[in-house]
Image 1 (tube, one colour):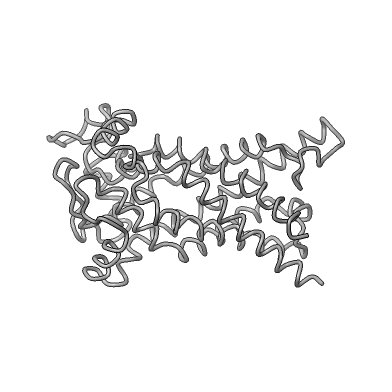
Image 2 (cartoon, helix red, strand yellow):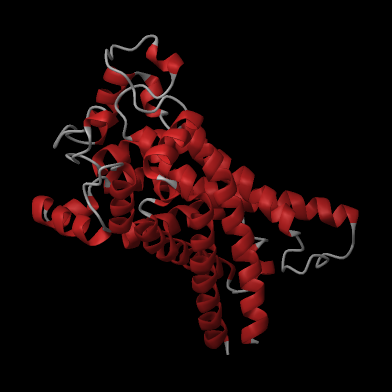
Length: 331
């Protein structure tokens, strides 16, 4: 009897994860494009960062609002959804794998697939299971992440007109290993990021559940298994996404640099990252610090944080409510 229940829960986790990831990606794509443009720009991305800088040229993007206006003027509204197809192909399996592995690990630890039993687990398990789930999801969807970064960062005129042309050129020039360029810093980043993401979300949920219990004896007041409202899920996701992104952003910058090594772009976008500019992850960090200062490791932090908070919130809210809907449909 337990096996069909676990199979049904796996289907629910996978489907709800894919749907929630897709919704979140569509909503936050414009902020993601701006973030990527900042991260791959070697020149300073703000006026205050230019003051101690050795760069003599001008910067293409010097602020979030200026970047928004430039992209809109040069590429139109569609520019904010550059690379959205590989982004969806990346984020839907990524989120599906992440939530499924996370639920499986919690089910194994609790000896039950019920959400109410998972809530009683140690908070530390949420951090560990979140990290493992993040690693599994990253390896499974990484080539799409790389393609998304390349298409979103290329600007106008386009180097690659579509995802297929980018894929063929990467395999031709770099081999199949090129599809996993930057995987190591990504895995190093995803362990603390996914751990913090899920761990802080579960922690905030526990605190909110206690607060709800103290206010009312009806724990299922809002129609979800944990008794939280959609706004409370939104706030928990918002705070967990912000915490995780602030801690792990520098490694995301390093990953993006590896992903766009050798990419040809119009000179107006500034100095390009040459082939083999970085020997390894540690060399990349040293080079960025030496040439761009500490600000270089936090390029794109504003749009990244502005994006990460609502993206996390939308993902968790969509996941919780899609799970409830699927359970009622499949029962």
